[in-house]
Image (tube, rainbow, N blue to C red; front, side, top):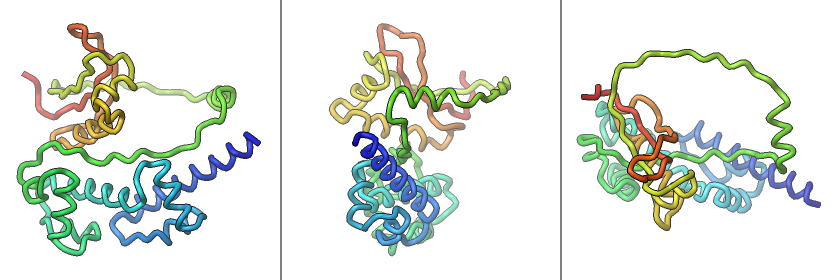
Length: 229
């Protein structure tokens, strides 16, 4: 019976993953719940329920947040008009886009285009099927052997931006600390804000460093393009 439940759960996870893939591929086109249900292989009602259960958002909340974040990245470059970006991401008007953008990020798109402050971009969590037991996980990790090639590349000196844990000793306590009662949602907002920095060279990373002044060790870093002094 447990095995049956595990199989059903993995089917649900794969269905939501297919919906995420469909949304990503068609984010600049109109997307209906009927289309997502066809991709998932479930009814529209069940499709919406399982999507919210695994991602924390309804399909259309997810789509809107993703569109607005992708729109923000284009506006950040300052080469495209606000109205053109709005239409590119399926908003019917400048006013509707401005209202949605302001609600999502706390400032209107025109101002963001001019000033490009750090904003909490939506960074979608990709659902995936995990082994049903530690034994299966161990087996799945040991079935193949791959050769890893390491290349050392010299980079110029640069500044970094750090969000250091204060008392956290692992990722989950870092989440609690970063978001108080908001937990890992707040940690994801930090990750999104660091990803929005125009001068950043790479995505933010989480890493361990030796504690400083009895502070926690888990931090998130975003590297910048400017040389350090």
